[in-house]
Image (cartoon, rainbow, N blue to C red; front, side):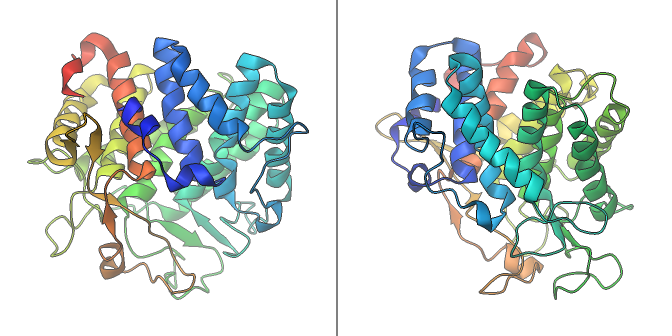
Length: 365
């Protein structure tokens, strides 16, 4: 899989964006297990296309105040750790400065983007908080973990449905957007990938969260609740998850691969790190079998294809996205989008690391 990703030309490698950071993070997970230079070189060569001698980031516009742009920063910190090259830390500090400047709502939650005032999206927790936590850990700025915890806890409190435990895609504190509920401010549906981003964020943030921080246990409790909600909407026959999580039987809804891979990664890592109970192992095994059966194809030249990736979904903007069920199922469904391929690699890497708990047949992929 990693070779398939590395050998394909992709538009995402041409610009500074969150997909770029996601695929490099997935290749990093392969390098962490193999220590083979080909993976490290791939990460470094791709990142070096964007970072000049002074640590400036080509294609990054700080004035947009877009949380998505922070996600590749994790790779900058990884490269600094293993090379000592100050360029990477200078570039990471540029992204950290954006966090200082990021607009906040009245409860101090980050706006997802400057163009989306008062709004917190689940996606944004993944885009910003793992980098924020890693940077705080490296720089020993322990006070930052209070802010990181605030972001994680606030969006959970505001978007969580008490009946199902599922999280709505986004929350508008102002309740001024047409897509926002008049009472809660939430968007109307549970989009799979949005919850996937959030679930991955939780297990990645905890890698750096101090053991003695008063909110660490709260974040783990959120993860445990989220895991229960996730498996409650796992398709019992296919083993995977649908684009709109709680409406599997609705016409037009479909099994979606990026969310399925994200959930598999989060559950597997949660078990490996001791945050989640082993009772989720059958769900992981069923999910992985479902991913292989329903989403994976092999090309004639030996590459791995990942099908059924929702190309993109959002709220508001122009043309306007209303967050309706019909909207979520109307976005293009594509193959080999990095928003699915990166989590696929991450999920498989975690399953391998679980070892005997989930026997892995390496010849499957």
